[in-house]
Image 1 (cartoon, helix red, strand yellow):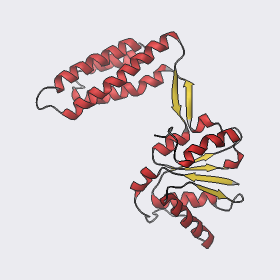
Image 2 (cartoon, one colour):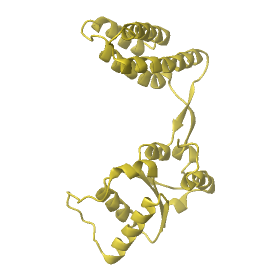
Image 3 (cartoon, helix red, strand yellow):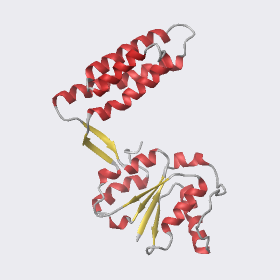
Image 4 (tube, one colour):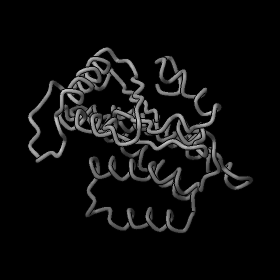
Length: 237
């Protein structure tokens, strides 16, 4: 059986060198296992994907997991099969509930709001935000957030105010414009959004990814992985 280990070198470099494992490990450091781990470490240092070939139970996955534990890297194991689809790994456009798209916008707004205004004095206003979101009153929700953004920009533009917060509120305006467009679209038809796949999400976070039993995947899924393993896929960044 085959397995592939790939990593995002740009982020993994910041993790540092080997550290002593503090937890008790059942990994057997045989000569074969240590040689394999050395080869894996060399490949990771060179930012190259690794193809592991061997029978079931010989320790391919265990070696990768132990190396990830020693170096402090998060490891995501994706079990491949004949049902594995490229959209599940890389992502694709899927129908979504507009509530899922607006949820991060609302969270961002509440975070910015709490840094700029008093939550105690504006408890009624924040409660109204919650009511609009729960009641799916998207236009009212966006209008309230837009009004607060204008007030924040006016306040933070005064001398001596936090310019970092000012820039955050300005950048939030773009999120609001996108949210408003999505809300209008949702009134007339089904809303689609690009949902990143498990492989892309893991690599973006700097995690190592083990594609276990990759030999079971269909040719279409394998072809979609080729640009990722070559390091030239625009999907990732």
